[in-house]
Length: 287
Ligand code: NAP
Image (cartoon, rainbow, N blue to C red):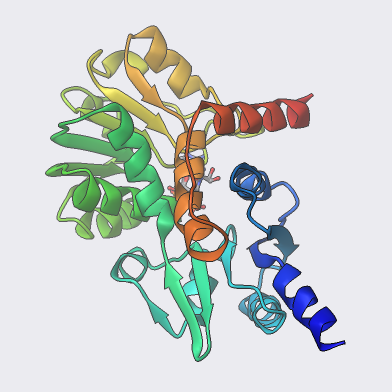
């Protein structure tokens, strides 16, 4: 009998999840299942919905912790709730004011922000030295993007342009950057090494980002953190100009790696096979 219990305990999978609202559309379970299958890890990664309030988020996180989950990724609209829920947090999560990873510990939960690592890895993968960047947008994602550019990509000169000026002031101040008026966004495009769309514009069912891509230097790298569609109108226009581009799927794949390694397995390769699986899932969803 005791052997049977021992066998059962040995067979119990390592558990992790993504909490969001909604959660069913998340690509994170596919990313984690792909990595687990590759190395034969006994692991399960679940999509879990939590209604948008902090109380709902905390109830779901408490439940997953009690059920033996090692950690969770956190997506919209809960990234700020995750930081509030945590008993401790990394310096990056505190600076961003948001977390997309919670690791459950005996005494609480540790919050991290792997979106910062994810964006930086995606950009560093395709370009070496970069001195200046223009970030369009000043929401939650933009905070992570400017921190990634300043702390992980070696960009010394960062400007932020956003429709709501007070928010660009605040995001630029995080990294000693400059805020630019929304009306001057096209003028700000020329002469920068990296242009990033960190708004939700360009997403399916949203208007495109209204900037004049012809003002972007042909030698610049253009990044879009939106990944539905994969080729946003901005990336299409940038490619037509001859710019190198980084899409939102690269960031998404890279941000998942720290959680996988911490909770479920050892190897989390971001490669062409993983991208192909995610692109197929996105295409099936769009069909
Ligand atoms: P958010 O906090 O709601 O910020 C939205 C941003 O878009 C703000 O800067 C907002 O400007 C701007 N915006 C929205 N509608 C606009 C309009 N009509 N005209 C001008 N600006 C407009 O959202 P978020 O959390 O930062 O997320 C932004 C996007 O990043 C989402 O599409 C999300 O899915 C994506 N994302 C991708 C990844 C990834 O791994 N690839 C990770 C995180 C987020 P105002 O400040 O003026 O409202």
